[in-house]
Length: 305
Image (cartoon, rainbow, N blue to C red; front, side, top):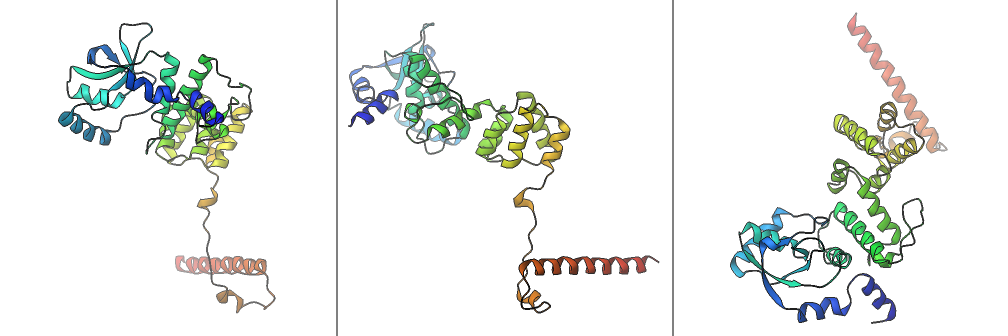
């Protein structure tokens, strides 16, 4: 392991000691379920489709991998570091005790381990990653780790190594911006009804502005494009955000909603000179459509007499 890799592992709470030595040399004990509490800031959600097979496995084989917990700093309970889903499954199965490993680490170290142990799951929502990155950033700040908190157009300036080993610093900050979205808009990002980039732009609106925008989206059944979201952000920054401006921007046609008609060239060229340009052909078609439209209107007028 080179110096840089070791440095990253230390920042991520993934030293060889925390990954191997601590769990193997710390005694596994059975602890009463009532003495254990989840981390209330756990950014990862439960999916029912994952819980049933886990419950079936625990019902048949018990909990094979012990939970990792730490003594709460203020109460006589133990907070989960790793194993939230196993704990939930055990509670649903009405188990009275679960196997645990008690780690003597700080709250900040525990939060970092919680984030890192779940970031590489196969299915992770944008909101989960957003709150996970924020949770880790907050923990690193409290530890006194350097985060270079100077502002830029996206957010705090961070070293990518300190937060993620797969996303750049800019992308990490974009994810953290999503935590500024109201839940209803954030759910739309998770459900891919609003793109990640659009969600980032909308996060700059105030909570009230976001609520007004969501009401418009719900009523009109339309979502903003990236360019529309950027215009809405600019309105907010200029103090000109209002219902009339939302309507004006959201009613503008999106590039992917503009109808494009394709006609084979040979169906047009026979009516034009061989030297006709693309613009000549477009003008010809526009005039032909206009002429035919007038012809249809005249027929309609005759039929109405």
